[in-house]
Image 1 (cartoon, one colour):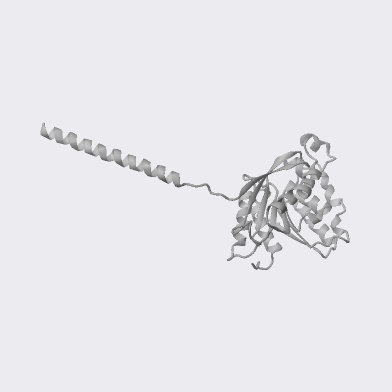
Image 2: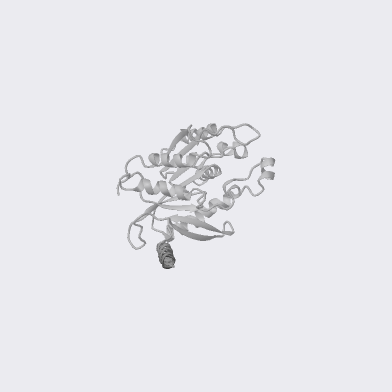
Length: 296
């Protein structure tokens, strides 16, 4: 009987110990959870566009040390397909890494990611191909998107943030098509163009046959153009075209303009395809745009 009471007593003490241990563990977890904080990569802005008749989301990365109250100003890198689930995060990572003082490849920069709404609407000019008109009914409004960039987006960024006037833009695929159109029609909008796997097949490659304003005598703004393409093959067109060939034709067309203020670099990346090329191409482009180490 005494042994039984002793056993029960030990069981109760043990049970109490484990209950206290469990309560302590739960309290510790709550305390740890209470200490958790969001990992902030940038800020989210929203701009009301009259040109597009809609609101657009901007994901913005501000470099380390950015202070609205000091005199330091920064270049701006504009990124198409700049949503958080698109290219914003990994491009910001490249910019941040390359601007570390022990790397010193890229100047500390503001990155403006333009979140996507309708790529085919915003990045393409009107096509004469009936099958594409039916398949992609919203296409053909790149003129409005270009007006949004020049008349609304750039002034907004310049007014709100500390910018120094240097402007780079990055675009891939249909985004590369749009950048080519901007380069040909409004080259002064940007100093640097990073054109990756451009969809120059659009409207049977008609953009490659257009005259560019880069050739005009008053186009004296120093401009750098980086063009990259992977091993990508045939385009989705009735008339066969090859992505690598079109990208090379674009580079040659710009070189033939013989504008001493425009530098172009063609980068063929045979180990990359249309889906994998973005990260490597942007990394390579920084070596072309900033051939020497950046000095603070």
